[in-house]
Amino acid sequence: MKLIPLSSGSSGNSIFIEENNTRILIDAGHSGKKIESLLKDIDVDPSTIDAIFVTHEHIDHVKGVGVLHRRYKMDVFASEVTFRAMESQVKKINAENIKIFQNSIGFRYKDLYIEPMEIYHDCQEGNSFIIHSKDEKATILTDTGWVNTEMMKKMDGSDIYYLEANHNVDMLINGTYPWQTKQRILSNRGHLSNENAGEILNKLLRKKGERIILAHLSSDNNSPSIALKEVNTKLSESGKIEGVDYTIKVAKRDAVTRDEVENE
Image 1 (cartoon, one colour):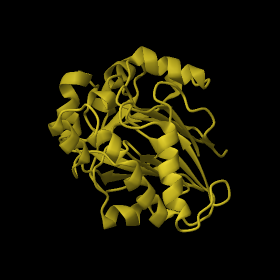
Image 2: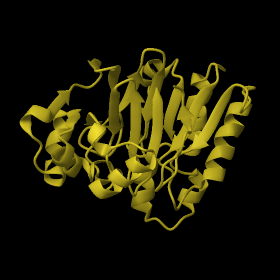
Image 3: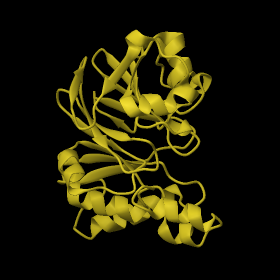
């Protein structure tokens, strides 16, 4: 499975995934033109994308969905609630390309098996995705303030973890955001902190060379170096060694994270 983050953060989110003859995007949170440019940066013709899978209706995840669909006739997958919630932003989707999935019910799409997994976020209804190819399993989880036991069971055994590490708690608390915004981010319907990400990964990693991509970092309350340090410190507490037991990268905010998790 090839998994390439095209961009990650509050300015726009999108991930390219390829398996054999199947090409999909997870979210399209930039303008159609920007997504086209990001795809061309990895030598992918946008017209070869089969479908967009939408996590939730926030603009940094759906901004380019409608334009890309109408331009290239891509299928659009989302829950029924998300389709309704994003309608005003995405506009018209051709009926034959509307693909509705249900929370927690997996399905096959071409060369991939997709498991939607409910997230806890301040949206109408949100899903993350666990993606299975013939040989690999990838967890994609951002925009959630809480991870429960059932979610941990579903993620267990993944080869790739694309996981939110949104903020450093001290930076957020002592920063300039309004207190109400801080409370929202820290709540069970907000975002995972660096510490949360480290704790989750510490429970999931099996020391089999898993590939970690830290995602959706705040530009105000985090940095790549801080996120990496916090997560690596947490993993080292149980004897896990970077470069031996796992690899770890940070998804870039406004550019492709090239060749970061590619196993063809």
